[in-house]
Image 1 (tube, rainbow, N blue to C red):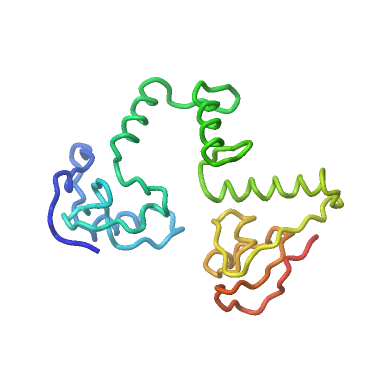
Image 2 (cartoon, helix red, strand yellow):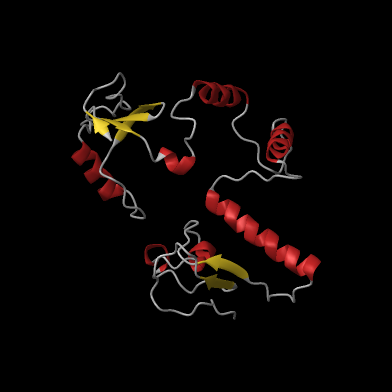
Length: 211
């Protein structure tokens, strides 16, 4: 959904180096990306330059309602004042603490999140696919150490038609040809089962073979 109403900041660009021509149009930006960015995605031909709340504005002043919301990473909207203030405050005091050290913010954050979600423990992740990978590792280790599954024999049951990300193990779980094809050999240890909403898939073994 879009309109052509220009908004303050719509044309805000990083200042180019001296002697460098400024890229201003959608076609120019798309062409530049196609020439320099490794092709692992097929984005819409919209070049976003500015955003606030649920609205984004492209480099030519067209305004769009951002219904995608960063695949739900932006459920609070773009540039939410409380989130921007928290991020700025943290960056002003500390950029990053690796897990090789403790952090004065990690414990309180995990306590509050676990309490809110009704969980005993939480483990923050950067991405959704990283969370899925960690869930697989947790389930397998529980199977071996608690349930007594023979070592190397654990299997994960996955639904046909799923998409959880693009790591090697996760595309091994998928029957989506765009995510899966030409990335084998695939990680073993999964069994597909059909779901009521899954799309018809091409014929293939319903079980990823173990070595």
